[in-house]
Image (cartoon, rainbow, N blue to C red; front, side, top):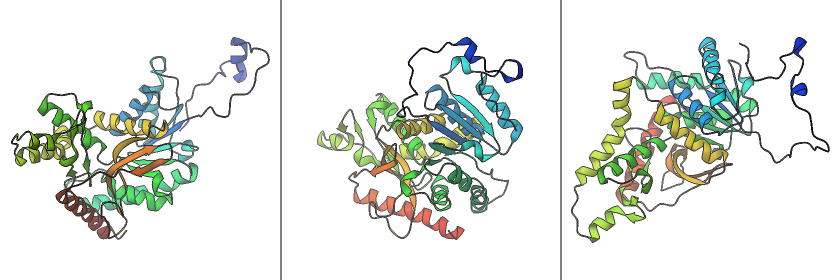
Length: 350
């Protein structure tokens, strides 16, 4: 398929009309080499991929956006639909192709592509098909953008982030999974809703697997800088552990609820991934719970495993993992979550 990018060659024979419209000033110099051209590639233009692309555009996070998908007609349609909104968006070059060469020189490659689960298909078989799919995605991305950061969104995100790390040959700091960044946002929303405060004033993390074995770090939750559980204990205010477990359960089940109601999730993950893209591309050095190589952290051992930990992100990718104090129970659950992921990897033989 052909790329459709903005061009000034509209005159007869492709004459560059920009020279007719604009007269250059005198004594000019070339643009500063410090001016960075930021390019983001999104692989997969389904509901999640397009929500991410749209959010990145509206938040002005890239100078160039490349879209990749195996379905040429849908891909071109999505590209044109975004291009037609150019008058309402920050200036961004939008290109699309089924050829991965279009991603060349990307600063950030966001992978949302994945196989759909067939009726009666086991999760293991689905995962095997996704691993096979990734063998056609990750190597070309690494070839055309060897210095990029890989941000994996496809599920199961922890195992596929590990697979991407192995297939790309990239250092671990440049391979990240979206992990529990969205889970933690849902967690903060539910706590804020429960206590009638603004979610932005709630600091709370879900860590571990993006899935059923995730771990809610209740011991470190704070609101406006006040540690919640220790405050309740000091004030001798009773609370039920069951209430806390129900909030965590609601976090785990919230995506299933959205899917059952509208058929898929899109907007929340779009904002979540754009939030990660901003921290990475703008060197924000913010803390996000994302899937990273966790071996050696919080007593996690037994093999290379990616799972979500509170991580500082910047232009170099993963800058470090935060040393948050965990209770013995939280530590135990986190290690069990790691074992759950390792067991899946062993079934795949990877």
